[in-house]
Image (cartoon, rainbow, N blue to C red; front, side, top):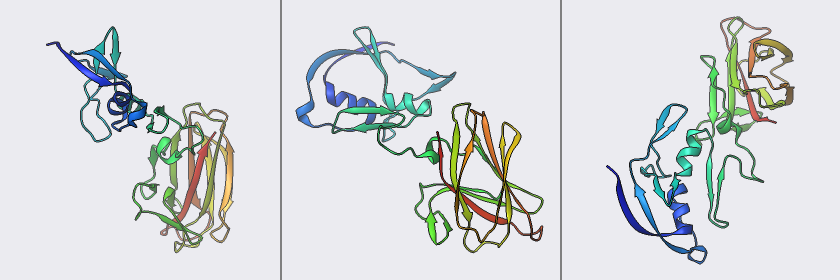
Length: 239
């Protein structure tokens, strides 16, 4: 059933509350009376119905007013895989990247599949990290594999990027093996690197040529088949 409510809405605050669930300074607010029509508007993204919620998890109902439908940006942005950020100092809503702010690639584009013993560190847990050359790395992928069973991680790059850059190094305290790092683009071997456990962490840039997916694969070059290697890939970025 359609229900019509007349509400006094503070325009600046409405953006913050409806879209991001935060507040703005009173000096930036304009008062405006609108008629908001709540009629059970549904949001469907790529065939999947979305329940819009604010930053605190509270359901936010869309409404229509004067021929315009108002939807909560946070719910829409996140349903499309975009991070939504509210800048109260400029009363700006950012969907996706924020100009001048470094991209968090472990959140924006983490590997969608990894081998059994490979671990993903997304930085969300301060107690979860890998240690490489004495440094605690809270974001990255810890590749683990053996002599015949490779470690791997796969990214869905969706034809969007020219290059992938990352640093790779031996995880402190793990088995002292030499490994091969194979790079597969769309299922075809594109490059192979040989990396020894004693090598300093090295940064590698891979030409992607707008590949649809990237698979990094590590395999023991030497050592006993029963023991796994541990190498970390971090500072990952795409361009």
